[in-house]
Image 1 (cartoon, one colour):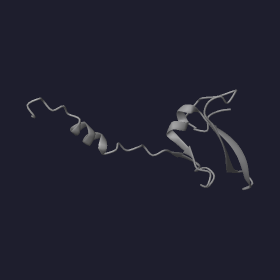
Image 2 (tube, rainbow, N blue to C red):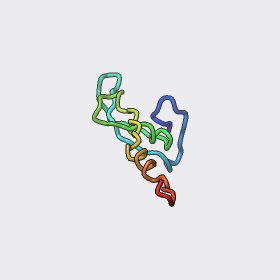
Image 3 (cartoon, rainbow, N blue to C red):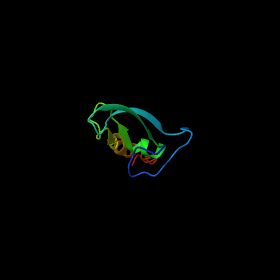
Image 4 (cartoon, one colour):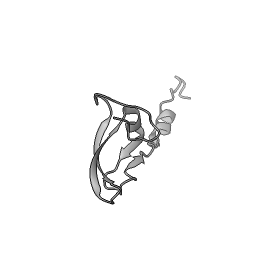
Length: 86
């Protein structure tokens, strides 16, 4: 089985990694059918399968997580204070 990401060349024989998804797809006769797709481990981290979308639009990029503002604040407050208080 080949990865559902069209830009990925990964294949699997044993389905030990990645994720399986059941989605709707259109047949040439405009009939909607269920289909099983597989996302490899690498693509699973960058893409999400959204089965409620229309066929052909179900593989969507995951939003990139924003860094929490507390990262910069934590760095500021973790500075060591010298024994003189400065």
